[in-house]
Length: 125
Image (spheres, rainbow, N blue to C red):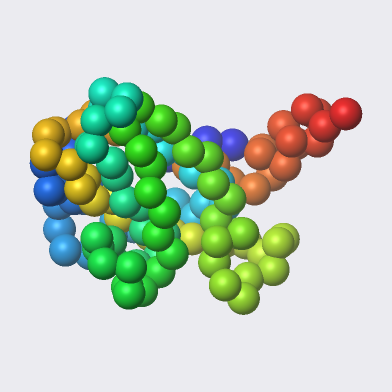
Protein backbone atom coordinates (compact mmCIF):
# COMPACT_ATOMS: atom_id res chain seq x y z
CA UNK A 1 0.00 0.00 0.00
CA UNK A 2 1.30 3.45 -0.85
CA UNK A 3 2.19 5.26 2.36
CA UNK A 4 3.59 8.47 0.86
CA UNK A 5 3.78 10.19 -2.52
CA UNK A 6 4.85 13.67 -3.55
CA UNK A 7 6.01 15.64 -6.57
CA UNK A 8 8.53 18.32 -5.66
CA UNK A 9 11.15 20.53 -7.27
CA UNK A 10 14.72 20.46 -5.98
CA UNK A 11 16.94 23.43 -6.95
CA UNK A 12 20.46 22.98 -8.33
CA UNK A 13 22.70 21.86 -5.49
CA UNK A 14 19.61 21.72 -3.24
CA UNK A 15 18.22 19.10 -0.92
CA UNK A 16 14.85 17.57 -0.13
CA UNK A 17 13.81 18.30 2.44
CA UNK A 18 15.58 21.65 2.61
CA UNK A 19 16.69 21.16 6.24
CA UNK A 20 20.08 19.61 7.03
CA UNK A 21 18.70 16.21 8.11
CA UNK A 22 16.42 13.80 6.32
CA UNK A 23 12.63 13.88 6.40
CA UNK A 24 10.69 11.59 8.67
CA UNK A 25 8.20 9.66 6.56
CA UNK A 26 5.92 6.70 7.34
CA UNK A 27 7.88 3.42 7.66
CA UNK A 28 8.55 1.93 4.24
CA UNK A 29 10.18 -1.05 2.57
CA UNK A 30 10.04 0.05 -1.08
CA UNK A 31 10.67 3.39 -2.70
CA UNK A 32 10.36 4.81 -6.20
CA UNK A 33 12.32 7.94 -7.11
CA UNK A 34 11.64 9.40 -10.55
CA UNK A 35 14.10 12.07 -11.70
CA UNK A 36 12.16 14.14 -14.24
CA UNK A 37 15.26 16.04 -15.38
CA UNK A 38 16.24 15.92 -19.06
CA UNK A 39 17.65 12.49 -19.95
CA UNK A 40 21.39 12.70 -20.54
CA UNK A 41 21.84 15.91 -18.56
CA UNK A 42 24.05 15.97 -15.48
CA UNK A 43 21.13 16.69 -13.13
CA UNK A 44 21.49 13.46 -11.16
CA UNK A 45 20.01 12.89 -7.70
CA UNK A 46 21.74 11.23 -4.75
CA UNK A 47 19.25 9.50 -2.43
CA UNK A 48 19.96 8.47 1.15
CA UNK A 49 17.91 6.06 3.26
CA UNK A 50 18.34 6.56 6.99
CA UNK A 51 20.97 9.29 7.04
CA UNK A 52 21.94 12.71 5.79
CA UNK A 53 22.68 12.84 2.08
CA UNK A 54 26.00 14.04 0.74
CA UNK A 55 27.92 14.00 -2.53
CA UNK A 56 30.72 12.39 -0.51
CA UNK A 57 30.60 8.57 -0.44
CA UNK A 58 31.86 8.38 3.17
CA UNK A 59 28.53 9.20 4.88
CA UNK A 60 26.07 7.53 7.18
CA UNK A 61 23.08 5.71 5.76
CA UNK A 62 22.76 4.01 2.40
CA UNK A 63 23.06 6.12 -0.76
CA UNK A 64 22.33 5.53 -4.42
CA UNK A 65 22.21 7.70 -7.55
CA UNK A 66 19.19 8.34 -9.81
CA UNK A 67 20.36 9.63 -13.21
CA UNK A 68 18.44 12.41 -14.95
CA UNK A 69 15.47 11.14 -16.93
CA UNK A 70 15.37 7.82 -15.04
CA UNK A 71 13.27 6.19 -12.35
CA UNK A 72 14.70 3.83 -9.75
CA UNK A 73 12.72 1.42 -7.56
CA UNK A 74 14.56 0.07 -4.52
CA UNK A 75 13.86 -2.28 -1.68
CA UNK A 76 15.06 -0.70 1.55
CA UNK A 77 15.41 -4.25 2.92
CA UNK A 78 18.21 -5.08 0.52
CA UNK A 79 20.05 -1.83 1.21
CA UNK A 80 20.03 -1.59 5.01
CA UNK A 81 22.80 -3.72 6.48
CA UNK A 82 21.85 -6.26 9.15
CA UNK A 83 18.10 -6.14 8.52
CA UNK A 84 16.14 -9.32 7.88
CA UNK A 85 14.09 -9.50 4.68
CA UNK A 86 10.77 -9.67 6.57
CA UNK A 87 11.65 -7.12 9.27
CA UNK A 88 9.28 -4.18 9.55
CA UNK A 89 9.53 -1.24 9.65
CA UNK A 90 12.84 -0.81 7.87
CA UNK A 91 13.26 2.83 7.04
CA UNK A 92 11.52 6.02 8.10
CA UNK A 93 13.95 8.70 6.95
CA UNK A 94 14.71 9.88 3.43
CA UNK A 95 16.95 12.61 2.02
CA UNK A 96 17.64 13.64 -1.61
CA UNK A 97 20.42 15.85 -3.04
CA UNK A 98 20.36 17.37 -6.56
CA UNK A 99 24.00 17.34 -7.70
CA UNK A 100 23.15 18.99 -11.04
CA UNK A 101 23.36 22.56 -12.27
CA UNK A 102 19.59 23.02 -12.81
CA UNK A 103 16.43 22.49 -10.79
CA UNK A 104 14.65 19.17 -11.35
CA UNK A 105 11.15 17.86 -10.69
CA UNK A 106 11.13 14.67 -8.63
CA UNK A 107 8.38 12.14 -7.97
CA UNK A 108 8.75 10.26 -4.68
CA UNK A 109 6.64 7.24 -3.76
CA UNK A 110 6.99 4.98 -0.72
CA UNK A 111 5.23 1.65 -0.16
CA UNK A 112 5.04 -0.80 2.70
CA UNK A 113 6.09 -4.44 2.27
CA UNK A 114 2.80 -6.32 1.95
CA UNK A 115 1.47 -4.54 -1.16
CA UNK A 116 4.73 -4.78 -3.10
CA UNK A 117 5.15 -8.42 -2.10
CA UNK A 118 1.66 -9.23 -3.39
CA UNK A 119 2.33 -7.46 -6.69
CA UNK A 120 5.66 -9.26 -7.03
CA UNK A 121 4.03 -12.63 -6.43
CA UNK A 122 1.27 -11.92 -8.95
CA UNK A 123 3.80 -10.92 -11.61
CA UNK A 124 6.09 -13.91 -11.04
CA UNK A 125 5.82 -16.73 -13.63
